[in-house]
Length: 196
Image (cartoon, rainbow, N blue to C red; front, side):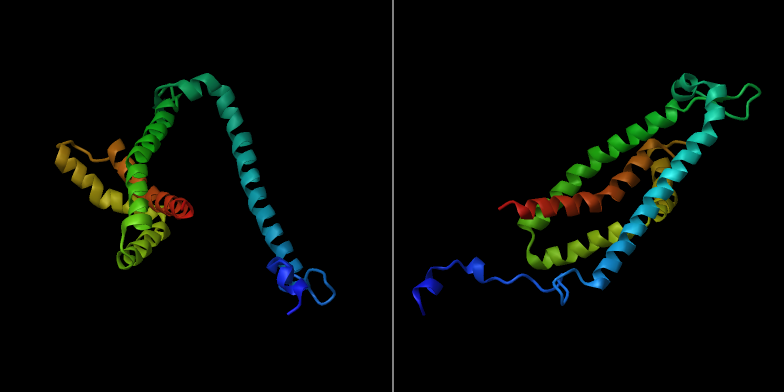
């Protein structure tokens, strides 16, 4: 071995990966085509969202002009079939805010503690069982969560609290909290593993 090969940095000997380069040194044609296809698909998806949003705004403007923006956003009564119809959506907005806040209050601590357990405490065998279960929760459609909530949770709330109907904000909060668990667990676990 000569002195130059001993003193040179190992980084100098690392060759650039030939994956991205073609025979002439440029980007391979198949990769360019795939990049163009993905760009077009992404552009179409964003365009559809924009078109739907614009359509909803244009379609809703006449009704909002007739009702009044303040009465629409801050009205406390929704009676669309009454003799004098009222279209206030403030209770719906507040219900969404309260439901989201309640789901975060319940879901974030449970999800974070589960992530801490998986990343730092759980034996590998236990973690290998819990992680696929969390991934399965992430794959369940929201409609199924809602159906299970209606079939199981609503009757349980009705019987436990002795109320005529179980459809309440509590049911929505519990279902939403369960729905957000997989995202919180996976993001928190990834962040915890990145920290030494």
